[in-house]
Each structure stands twice: as structure tokens, then as C-alpha cells.
Amino acid sequence: MRSGGVRLGSGQCLAWRSRVTRTVVAVTITTLVGVLPAAGVAVAASSAGKTVELTALVVASSDRQTKAYEAAFKLYEEAHPGVKITTTPIADPLIWQDKVLTMTVGGTPPDIMWLWGINFRNLASTGLLMPLDKYVTADFLKDYYPNAVEASRYEGTLYALPGLVGTLAILENMDIFDERGVAPLARKDTWEDFLAKAQKLTFDRNADGNVDVFGFVWYSFTIRDWMPWIWRNGGDLFDKTRKRFTLGEEPAVHAIQFLAELTNRYKVTPPGSVLYGSPWTYFEDGKAAMYPSGPWSLERGRKFTVDAGPYPIRKNEAVSLDVFYMGVHANTRYPDLAADVVKWVTHTFEGEGALFSSGFGIPAIREYALKYFVNPRTPVQEEVFLFPLEAGDARMLPYVDNWSQIEATLRNAYLPVWQGKDSPENVARAIKSKIESALK
Image (cartoon, rainbow, N blue to C red; front, side, top):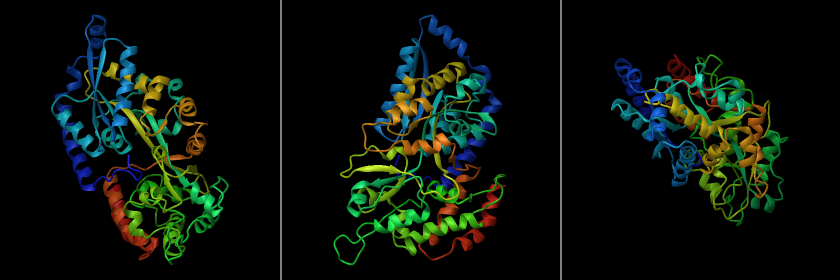
């Protein structure tokens, strides 16, 4: 995963959802699940010396991720002789979704799927994920981080199990912090403390009259990176019913204004055009002292020392949560066996260890997160990423129907705010009816 995430075109995603809806109707009419052999057949075949073959379609954006997911399935095979799992990796989650649709229409759906948050919403809402409630107990689920389990439900039904999770923290270039004599970010830091540190970290190194190093850089393209500031100030994107747009209300307006002023008033952040483009390059090139990202950004060959710090506090300590799931296709030939694979890989120490080796996130099982992710041999305070999970402060984006359309509208509408050309109040007022129409 790129630091800021994959850019999904709203038109493409909406078109996919439309095609999936039509496909689900067609698949429902033919009722594939009712006429295909169940998992009991697979178990019987296995005990008779025959190999049962399952297919796994995974979102994997690197060879390392692919090998990690293959390793997880290999461990299951070793523990369950007679089962063979074939993995097909696809780097782009949007193309992955199209592949799921194509395989479903062709009558050869994948049995097991490794998917991202927006994929989960699309598949669960269109009937392509098999409910898993009957395969798990409350005691089984209590080992996962509660926020991750809640994010694995759609309209109250459990449609997947969390394999890895990712919360946001602020990466720090400690070489710049030390050079400027600035203390690392602390959990007690307020927004005013954060700004003061960012100002000290912004400087003209070569005395040519231009800023060479900015204190902070962030990715305005993804709404996920807006939300910690908005949530921490008591605001939100929608109300609890998810029918009313609330970025025009005072808490959200003030948070967005603060972010905009980091560029336009205080000059501690690069121009809005940079924030909308590839801002992480500023951090990677040593031209910014701080950059918010997830645990997937920790393991990189940098020429400077990196640590992770918490977001500054305001009214609460909420941060964005990403969940990466394993689910079962609703039309698998082997529902019980596929569900067992999903349970084993995401719940055992061996399975979670293999998933963690992808470098993509934090084990969704609390016990394993503490054993695998927190490494006393590194200079990084990995615990910073766990604080929101431990406290229950990690929140998923509100993936409503038409999310891609709404996200695209927000990106485009608020770009003038980051550029200092418009106010958060004006923008929210201008797009409110459009957003709320999409929520109906």
C-alpha cells in the first residue's frame, strides 16, 4: 500500500457496484449455493485420500504480501492434510473487485478472499460475502480487537474476520527533531503544542530565503487522513443516522480550518497542491519532519531515524482505522471448509504471524499484536499505533453506499480550502445537498 492509499476512481467504483447488483440478482436466480457440494463432501474426499482444492483471491500490492498470504495458507495445508489452497494475487483493489465479479458470473467464484475495507463494504452490501456468525462464538471473537470485529459486520451480520489492522500515527524524522532541539510528540500534546513544534521544525537550512524543511506534511487526497483531526475536535462527516452531512458544523469547520492554516497562515506545511499530490515524498526525502501514516510505512530503508508519535489531543483521542479482512465467497462450493480456513489463518499464532510478515499491518488479535508488532529491538515506539486500539478510539471511515462518489466530491470541493482560496463553511454549504442526496 502506498503511504497515502490507492486512488480509486469514483466512476469506476460506482460502475462496479452497479454491475455487482445485477450479477447478484442473476446468481440468486440460479441459486448456485444450493446445488453445489457442501464442506462435508470436501472433508469426506479428504479422508478418502483425495485433495480438496480451494481458491483464494487476495489483494496484494507487493511480492512480499503475496508470499505472506501464500505462507499463511501453506501453514493451514500442513495442519490439514488433503487441502490445497491456490492463491491468485491482484495488486489493485478495484481490479480485484472486477475479478471477483467476473469469476462469480463465470460460475467459478473464489472460495476465500483477502480484501480491504472498501471491498468489504461493496461485497457485503451486494451479497457476495458469506455470513460467518454460525461459525464463531463470542469467546472466539473476544480475542480480536473489538473495533476490528465491529468493522467486520454489515447491518449486524458478521461477513468476514479481521486479519490485520492499521491505525494512523505521526511518523517523525528524529534527525530533524534532534537538529532543531524539539522533543518528540507526546500523548499530552495539545494542538497548540503540535503547532509550536511544527514551527520550530520548519526552517531555511541553506539561508537562501526559502523553506527547505517543513514541520509537517499530510495527504489531503484521502478522507481517512482528515478524520483524526475532525473526530478529535468533536466533529464528524455524517450524523449517527448517516443521512445528514455534518462537515459544516462548528467542530468540523474548526478542525478543517486548523489543517488549512498549517499551510496558509503558519506556513509549516507545503502548499495545497503538494498535499493533494505525493506529499509522502517530502518526508521520505528529508524535506518534512512529520508525516501521518499507518504501520505499513514503518519498514523502509531510510537514511534517517524514524519514530512514531501520537496525534495531538483535543476533545478525544480518535484516529482512523483500516481493517484488512479474510472472507468467504457466498457461492463457494465448500462453505464450512472455507470458513475454517478463514478462522484458522486469522485466529492462530501461526496464521497471524504469516499475515504479519507481509509488513502491511498489525495482527488483529490483541495477544499477537503485542508479541509480533511491538519490537523492543527497534527505535520505533510501535505502541503508539496500539494505543487507539487498546482504548477503543480507532474508527473506520463511514463506508456508506455511494462512498466513492461522496469521497470524490469531498476531495474536489475542499481543494480550494487547502489552497487558501475558500472557507470550510462555504464549501460545506455548497455541497451539503449533493452529499445528502447521495446518502438517501
